[in-house]
Image 1 (cartoon, rainbow, N blue to C red):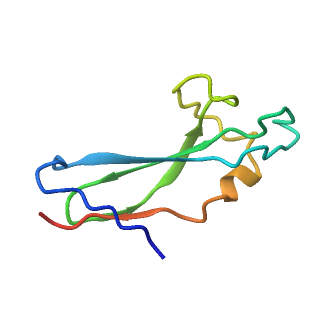
Image 2: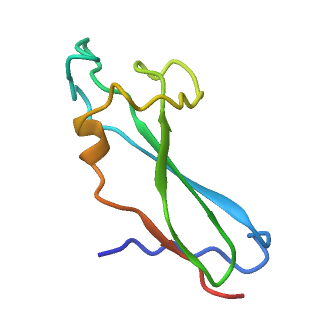
Length: 94
């Protein structure tokens, strides 16, 4: 099952990064026992027109969402890494 997103020709450069961020409210674990629980997981993949890529987790957001930074340490995350099974992006050739 997928969610198609159509981007008009000329918007994408020859090569770009696709980012995605997911979170589940109050998803607590021993490393993140507070009110907010585990932070969002940030995924990224590099793609060119006519290719496909599976996004990989590259870090997490701030535990309370205070800034737009991506923190690369995934070691304290547990169930947050299983909210999304996989993210596949397919780019049609232009």
